[in-house]
Image (tube, rainbow, N blue to C red; front, side, top):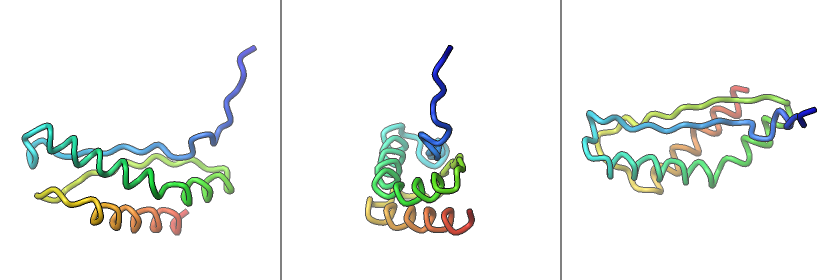
Length: 90
């Protein structure tokens, strides 16, 4: 009999995207996604705890729409705002 994994082991699935049309070079798209994932990783725990306390799961997909590559501190601040809005809306 297979062992069931806990439903909320990973309460959030997150994806990142950067448009090829705005960033034709893969190195730029990859940098944006890498910076976004790192900013998410550093701040996700509060949202994870909130979702686990409510036994809920969430799927999030973030699309980068700016025309220039933002620095890490800007992305960190913006993802912080996104996480607070997600937490407050649940």
